[in-house]
Amino acid sequence: MTILLQVTGLTKQFAERVVVDGVEFTLEKNTSTALIGPNGAGKTTTLSMLTGLLKPTSGSVKMLDGNLRANIGFLPQYPQFHPWLSALEFTEMAAKLNGVPAKKAIVEAQKTLEFVGLGNDLNKKIATFSGGMKQRLGISQAIVHKPKLLLLDEPVSALDPVGRREVLDLLKGLQLETTILYSTHILNDAEEMTDQLLFLRDGKLVEQGTLREVRQRFDEPNYVVEFSTEKEAKLFASQSELVGEAKGRNVYIEIINEKPSMQELLQYLSSNPYKIRKVERQTASLEEIFMKVARKI
Amino acid sequence: MRGFTVLLQKEFREAWRSWKFLWIPLVFALLGMSDPLTNYYMMDILNAIGNLPEGFEMLMPELMPVDLLQASIGQFQTIGLLVIIASFVGAISKERASGMATLLYVRPISFGAYFMSKFIVMSTVSLISILAGFAASVYYTVVLYGTFEIGTLMASFFTYFSWLLFVIAVTLMMSAAFTTVVATACAFAVIFIGQIVDAIVGAFWTISPWKLPVYGVQLMRGTMEMSDYWWSLSITLAITIICMSIGALTMKKNASMTKI
Image (tube, rainbow over all chains, first blue to last red; front, side):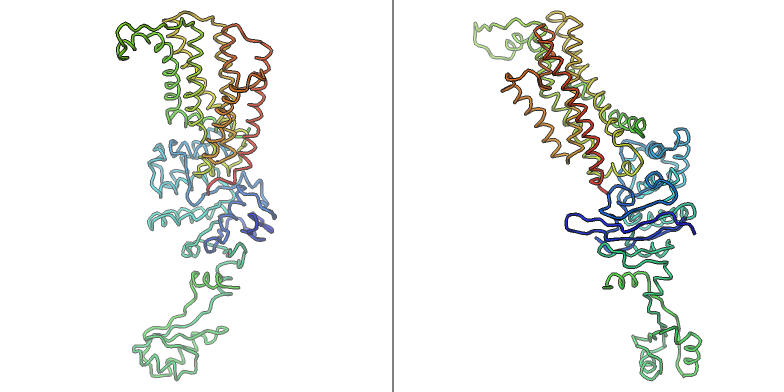
């Protein structure tokens, strides 16, 4: 994999307050990275520094493959447009300002608007657009010049479930062509569309890695065995040589160093006279991992 | 000046679609025609609605065409400037506060080009406005009072336009530097309080941008001391360029203030 962006010691201080503190990470080409963290963690400030809107107090942002400013597309959380322009005029202007030649700009603007599903609204004034349409227009202005890096600040958090689904599908389609870094606090989105996770807390990068790596570090897997009665579940938990905790008809069995294996568990259960309804292995959701990271000292 | 033509087109579209090219010149045209008409028909107006006592007679001064143009410029200097400053003082600060600037500032544009595009559009609207104002004033003055010498009229017109360029540069610079409320207060202070100060104690000096509108009229009267005029004009244009440069720099410096 080729590295596209290298962020080193990125720090932003406002008066006495350090909002982003020595953040370091790299982004590989054509990957999708989620910047996760609670409110006030420094996600938007980090993105602002990457876009060049905010000057870092110290540290650097380097695009290894060309000029950063000319090769990024940015979508803020609540994109604001000039309402008297049409969708086509705005996207065309965005393309031209990024150096796309005039004749090509209008063609690219049309294509991009069709790609984001605004093909029938090219000449409508932005003032008449709904929130979902504005978000799609936001994506179109961010990708019309085919940037190498797409920076998205909470791209779907302001949308209703239908709009959220549409925009997520659009972004998934872009993953193959460009590198995406997006901030979010909706963890399902991150789970759905992520190669790398960056956890920010109090301005510091406290965890990073692929979803699998982070899971391995924070996951506390267990088996859930569902019995036919609550009584059986309690009996099993008290008599079993496996470490388990009964909750209702379920018994939760901890997996420590991959022990017991599923095979061992099934053998043990079949050798005892219990009526089993279901056995499954549970892994922590990203939300549970997030809570653990957020509480980590 | 990267992106200049694209940004200029965007600014023209905004001014056009928000009717600024129509309503601001219309205000100036109304201001321009009001003095020649009201002065000429003053006696008729008073007789019709003034409820004057029987046998009342008022001696009206005999006005020269240049007096009426001076009165019209007086209107431009108050209501006209108020309209121009109020219409344009948010040009940069409002875009920043609303977040509209964000999608432009993240692109590889030149802030000098962006500032310049706004300045050119504001200047064009102002040029058309005073053209409408002067045209209305001159038309009714010529019809009702008498003619002007075209050369000095043109000189007066361009002198007033130079003053407006100064007003626009100050207004835009304030917009780039501050929030809309603060920028409005500062622009009004520089332009209007500057005029008041110049009117009260300006006798001690002869060279100042705030004197230009008066000097424009004096050109028509033929009473202008030309060296004072040229110095004032030069200093006004120099300060205008300085304000534009400071404005472009502060626009860049304050780019991080844009709402994300």
